[in-house]
Image 1 (cartoon, rainbow, N blue to C red):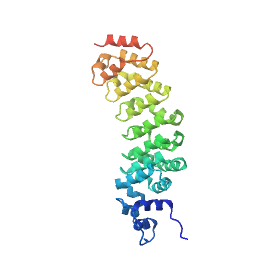
Image 2: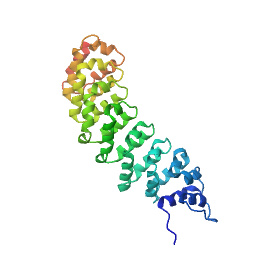
Image 3: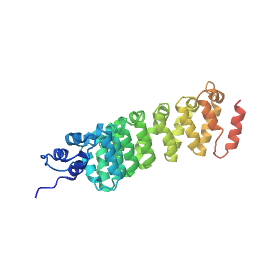
Image 4: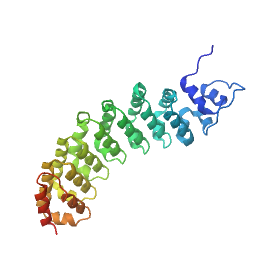
Length: 308
């Protein structure tokens, strides 16, 4: 008998609106007389472009997502269909959500294959307003041990470049949350070494905040050590002040006391009074009055005496 069409061809035919489109996808001549299936917007594009038809067809994307959420046995066929154009689909506003949904619902070897295909495009994905969501979803759903390729590509691109990127910082936040210290050690070393520079940056500061909140205790201590020489100036800075607030919340008792001591001993034009009177430093002094470290009561009382 005639050979069976590949599974992605059979699945595409179920979306394509009948025998004519199905035959076009399969590269065969249409069989006359076959009853047409319900036609979806973009079905002609499926016949012509394959999975790339998803790029500019919200209705087709909705149909694919619905199939992925159902008990349909077509998930593996959809995966194979998507994989051929996974980079382009991940970078497009509409189709990127199909790739994200695939990462959520496909398991085992299929998900590993999808993750491997996506990891190769790490830089393209983090730089994209749509692709970065695919990359963060990948980080969230995959075992951290499988993210070595992503981490290495970020290292090769340059940790500062990625940390200072409006979407790259989000990717680094997810890596800090989901990966182990051992897996992130090289990047974390670099973040700590550049902590002061990054905390002054409009995007880089989020990376340092995340390291303080989610990183190992010794990483937080390393960040604070880097910030202490200029802690009062940073407390008055538009973005760095958020990092100082986060440090007062998540630092060890020793770290919190060191920050307070740095703020107390600072002289004009960055004295505690001037920090409190500044637009951004005022939020730091509010945090200062909510310390939870050992001996916090005495430190808070001293701060109240120093402040008007």
